[in-house]
Image (cartoon, rainbow, N blue to C red; front, side, top):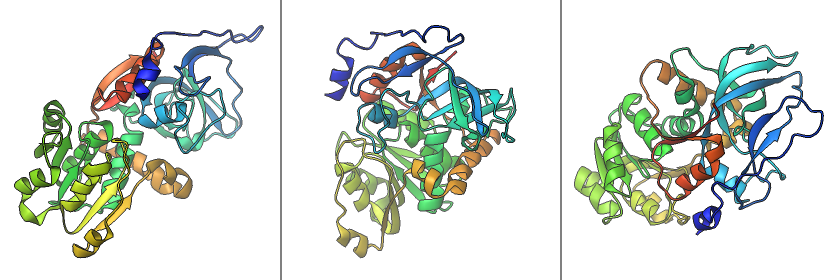
Length: 350
């Protein structure tokens, strides 16, 4: 229903506002002026950089479900209106503050801003930038932070995935799902069962490295997994769906298995039956990548550095399913909300 409300005749209704008299240079940004309404493309006056800040010429910005939620007032962080969404981006450094020592003008960087990424320019603290190795294109770099940061923390830190273990990932054709497949298969040498809601998405997950797949729209996920691995179960589950899918995945765990909750894309938050944790000595845990930024910044930063390193080494390759122009931002939101997207969805600012 949300997608219907958002898209009712609004996807190309644009508002262009003047940056004001005598303000000189300006840049375009997608602006949320009212919650649950389409974003407007506005011309914005650049603000000065503070001593610790960097001005970045944005080339690509990731489109995440969290961006949509914040524009609907349904995210845990609720910025004051008006604001520009966009939590991750890639680009080149235009200007640095007097105290900046980590990057210089012309450097290629990815940034994790929380907000303000869906604009032609973004001013950001130097600590929120990571230099991109020359071998990684800006387009691919923009797809790394949230999806691969989540996958790395979920698999490596939370689940402690070991070589040869079997990983079940739900919503496997989404940006996070494909990142989990990529890291589990090509970095951790684990075996992956991809679970998705259509044959087409299962096929994509297999093409991207999963050893087997399950279409959970066609029957019981638990029974399908049992046919693949037997009664022993899987060692790790990375779940982004929630609801009944989470419960069936929980039942599919092996002795001392681990299930990591990443999100609730299905819209339902399941209750954990504690007796199942006891009977199989399994662990249920969560991971919210963005919170590490405040709770454990070295670990947060390390997940991005690892993603860049793995990509530079050729061990991972992000899959970009669609690229929209800035003026198509509402179309991009609809594409994600209507579950048409596979892999990472990006905005191109150039």
